Length: 202
Length: 90
Image (cartoon, rainbow over all chains, first blue to last red; front, side):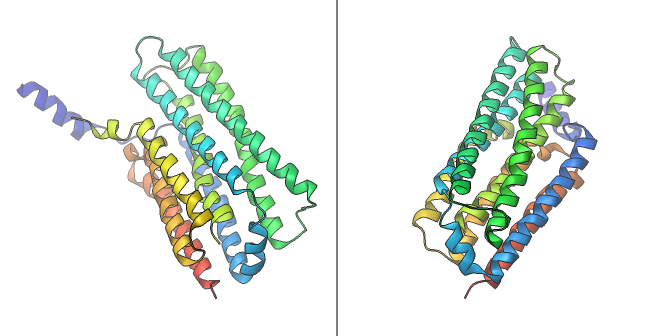
């Protein structure tokens, strides 16, 4: 009994503080966050100078698509987190179960692309261009920049899925998986600010 | 007894993210426009972003400087947006 208490308290005291994933990837992620942050603030201050225009044009956005895409991204992110947890716990079929979670994450990401593609198609059919207005410039620029990151993230997820299914990652040896996961969570994190900012606040 | 890590499992974090996302959407559809909507949905964005950063990106176990970098980014962006929106209010 005393030994279990000792081991649990020493576990708490000695758990090392570690960054999961590659430090170079994390530095890259911070740079990405900075770029998105500047873009968000530029949008907010541009709107402050012309709230009427932004509110009128925002009313033309499909908020339901924004909702579906938010749900797809948080689900995708959760599945990636689940895949990392499964690999770390090891156990029977860990690689296959983690690969299945990653496949689900990829499906959600593809769903995001389809929904956003539909939205863009509707905007372009209605004649929206980057130069149509200050709002359309920010809307297309900001969501387009994010869309590009989703596409890139999906390429990363496909690589992770193949590697995981091949049993490359093991407990204590999953740096590549953790780095790619951090990138995908960053894409999710940014959207969690973008959705209320661009689709909801008026 | 559930541990801290089981309380914040990917499943429970996902459930919270889904519920707060739904609240954000319905606030936009049916809530009053203006400062309460802005402050309310951004407070939820802070909560959601913190959950993703701490539990999905696993910054809860990371060295303080990394955790503060990402959470600090989130707070700065959110407070900046609130400031800009309140400035643009009639």
